Image 1: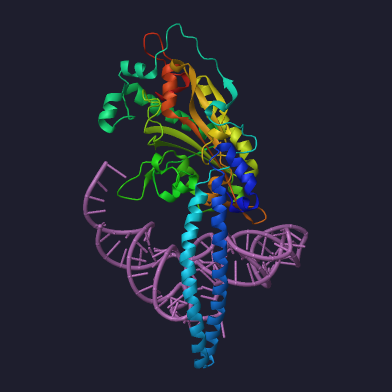
Image 2 (image 1 turned 90 degrees about the vertical axis):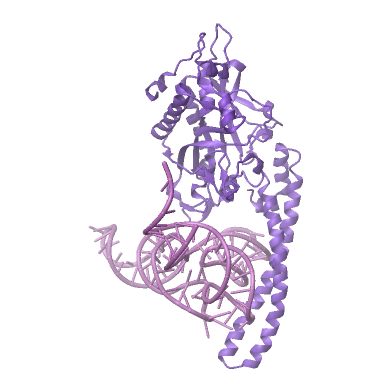
Length: 419
RNA sequence: GGAUGGGUGGCCGAGCGGACGAAGGCGCAGCACUGGAAAUGCUGUGUACCGGGUUACCGGUACCGAGGGUUCGAAUCCCUCCCCAUCCGCCA
């Protein structure tokens, strides 16, 4: 959530930044400002009336104590009349406030100053490459062919159990999935200083508002019909919200959390994309990295976060590149994002395997995560999140990059002790 | 799912219609004492919003789990809901 004070003081600046994301955003700024004005007018009137009421009520109490019943009765009538007006205004305020909040919650974060300007993913900027794509002396198979032939990936049974975009994994695939999770968690906890966390995967709506999935992206989420609970689309949701509503001590920061969880996405906008294989599934595993840090350290921490995620692919010895997302491709909550894209031989291109973002105080403000600084002032923290990595996609990368002519594939050296 | 007991400030805990933003304690900060520290003493110590000065300030409003209601006035009385604990039931 953006700071309403910033919107009030620099509406043109905010509009300009939002325009870099999408031409359609700027009008919402005027909308929210109009509601803010209306809201403040009503608040002022209510508070004046209440101040008067409180003053008179106090007087009534004193009059009673002094035994001046008649005077007290007179004052009562005056206060009663004010009460009617207050009730009416409060109803009005409730309505305006709700519209104000809904609107404010639907405004995305502002891109950081150094984010490249562009309209969509074609204008993302490559930052660096690691490793050389292997030269094959045969036409590399896509992972779904490798997996089906070896009896490791069963797409038909996935559909039988749960429908399209669900898959069953057998034997080495299932085992490799588990090995990868352990490998990633070990790396981040032992080498990078993260605290391992296990979290629920069902969460309340306000938690999803905290990280920015709600209210705008309800159609991307799975929701229970019996209870007001949603399946998480990423552990970013639970890890970031661990400290929702809390005021942390400055010396507790930074906090580094990592968790393995399954993730659930309806992929509402992705009909027809990547339908084959396990690249885009409704349920997938991910090891997530979340950092809660002091504002002045967040960009330094973002660079470190990306490197920590990259380390996974380096140890697995799989080529990748890092791209910086342009303004038009940034996610809703992000001020700045690096994607890590892994080399997929069968597609002869790099595909996203991790997304690392600094949301600055956008999520902190929504989830009310603050810390008390040395002067005793409460300030919003900055929150960062990144995949470290998407496990299913890492499995794809291994199957394809380590494949052999006979249709089998090798296991990366670092994973052997996990198998 | 059933029964019982609870939800008050950073924490513990009192208050049960008017002077209560809320006793007391702990914690924290400052000062005094000390060679330094401990102990002790004194002082201070919530948040959000609205308005004015627009730096360290002042005024107002709200907040005692949430939402309604009664009342001139609610932490306090009434209703609804949520959450927590314990026991029973069910269950991996």
